[in-house]
Image (cartoon, rainbow over all chains, first blue to last red; front, side, top):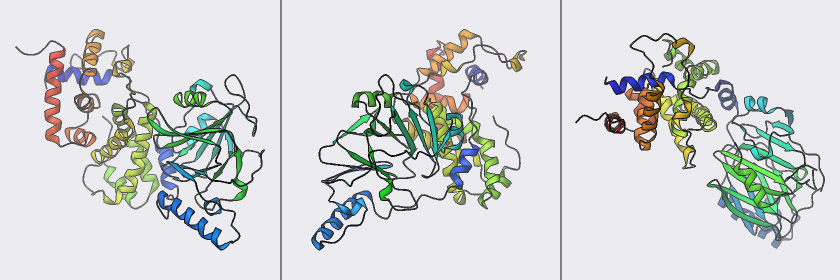
Length: 255
Length: 186
């Protein structure tokens, strides 16, 4: 071994490596979770099928089931890892105010130990006022709530300044859904190089597709402006009455 | 280097039979080297944690394909390093190694033997700065082989290249370091 190699080896013992987290509980949780349900068809076929089924139903003059996939023609379809956004000529009615079902209240520290991923926090918004944990999607979902404040105006639907939701988009490919009308602004963009979708203005709806059950009408609720973005294998959703620029700033500060 | 007790093969065999407790023990045995290997590639603690965690999950799923009797650690590090590389994606996250140098001697190193003598502060920073200036493949080879103290086989697995490539990269990287440090032979 040369002198340089010896010095490198000595250096190894002086490096202050980042503290190694205990991965065993999270790994065990992920392994113990049931495998995510496979999608029956690729996303593109799903859209085609929805349009085809909707056309057939219109021709037949049948009574439409309360499932958005087949109720209306899909004018536009966008997808991220973990979320879908559909533009439709008409959107189903939904309650304007709804008690948010975000799961069990917890703390960031506890959520970190229980989730199958490291939760991200928008640093420019500071520590969240509320942290909630849901075990519905594989790997879990965390929701962070912020009271209204500077740069975070109160939302009409839930009275919050900011709602952040995060889950493993790669394990739940179509877990989150958006239905928007013709006048809603839908824009594709990139945040820190990763794909994102900004949805602004005019009522649009939000719902979940739990892995082991079908979408239900009761899951619908009206949503405020929303930025959906991919961050690694996570799908992050930022909802609030803020501008696109503010949403992007918040997203860039996610750590 | 992490301790690898002789019962590792038995733990792997038990984990292959579906014993979660055995796999959890395997995770605890290897999580430090897995996390650090991922950190060398991502330079982000959050990404390294995710990469290591997902690597362990994927390795568990791939256990039926693991050949019993062969070394487990290189196989695992190949999976973890692959997860880490998938996360880098040119996001520009580059925590410098120099930030991670302990400024003070550690208490357990307070009386070093001449062989294990610590580098003085100037030497440390010069050496780290020179490592930082290396191209990515050379820097990762140096980090895996010397800073993580992986074997050549493990370095090859982590870098997803043949052992011969590791040797040539290391040779070129050491030569470049000597040049950077003004120690090249005339």
